[in-house]
Length: 131
Image (cartoon, rainbow, N blue to C red; front, side, top):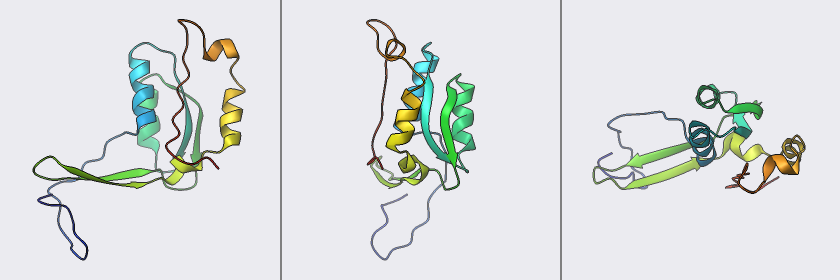
């Protein structure tokens, strides 16, 4: 955009791009590409096929990825001609994960599967309040 939208203003963008992302998805894909055996847990909406495809294409296990009947979270990012950005987040299915889902996911692993000296590591992203 030439400039960020201001209150009461309507502007046109120069283009529109859709990318897979989110910190957790990006980390899971990076770890898998680095050779780690990765299980990605969380929630996507019924519009999130592009995200599950990206994870699957990177050999990430999707056993604990739930698809919910709601929209997936999105980030609307305005980027100005000077490279500055403004971001609007919609949490969607990303914010529907519950403590019970986390407990259920962790119950499929033993302590040695999750944390070992020099072995596997557990990464948990909680950029949202748990229900």
